[in-house]
View (tube, helix red, strand yellow):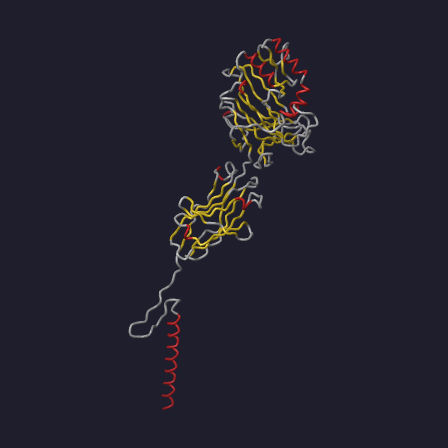
Length: 464
């Protein structure tokens, strides 16, 4: 584009800012999200995620003058697993950076989607109602230069997109990759490069300009395809304390591996414990009542647990007459014993948990064996699963088993042997608890013998 063309674009952009901001943007920029790449969970925001202060490939956060960036428990419009939170005092700032998520550096012309969700919270306590995070797209002309050569930042501020009366205290999806999205720039684009001053023919600076106009001007200024090397989300106090949320950052460059679809999720962990151990049971008997606890850390969000499963390795489905479960102190309910990969399992569907919207759930299980159940020692395998356990459950796994060494022992009751009479005479001792008849006979024999001895002694005394 020629210098005159750039100047004309600048004039047209400035003359149509109001129309774009208050008409098209309300429909095109603050609407439902488009199709996005597969979701990646972001579960932590370390202050520094690289060597010697250099950002690495993961997300990281930071703040100045008391500003804080964290992943909090606040649910977003799409899920209940938390969201990113920026807290800034009146003179502070907070930032969440993508690190090197745009490596390899894609051409700006390939940008097809750039979305993110925001919400302002607690207006009375956290400053102006327009305080939601700004998205910063970091660009440069020469991707091989070090330090950055002809670099410039494009800044997307939701406040520039809508009427001043817009309610920011609601979740809104911003389509910052649309050509009509309005951006300011940290610096100016000239026909021959990037300038820190508003020289003749420059475009950008503090005046919002549509992204489509800036893209064309940037390509002309660079003389080659300019590239994006990073993106951040930033918030500053600017005279008043602010608290805001954001989530579901979607960055897509057509044909490039750079970018992604990022869901900021609370880092609380879940653990599965049980009490007591299963212990021993006889064929035909009822097992102990074993309680499994799905326990969330104090900062873990309430999530829908999909199921709890208990398996008995080496046993057969036919060994179980019935099984039951109950949640907390609710009534007992029967649960089927099924064959799962050659192992009998009871699977308690998560729909049973929905009446308890909490991160901690107690599920108690008991089973009755058939009279012909085979004896032996059988390993227990218990685990719980939830869509949100990836990134939440202990050790980041999608399921958790504990304890791993529990067993169920199936054994017939111990019966002590019945004593046999001594050859040639009556039994003098009873060694088995079941030999009650022998014990009674022995007691009667002793009584009779004692009575006979006393009677004989009395007769001898009388004769004297």
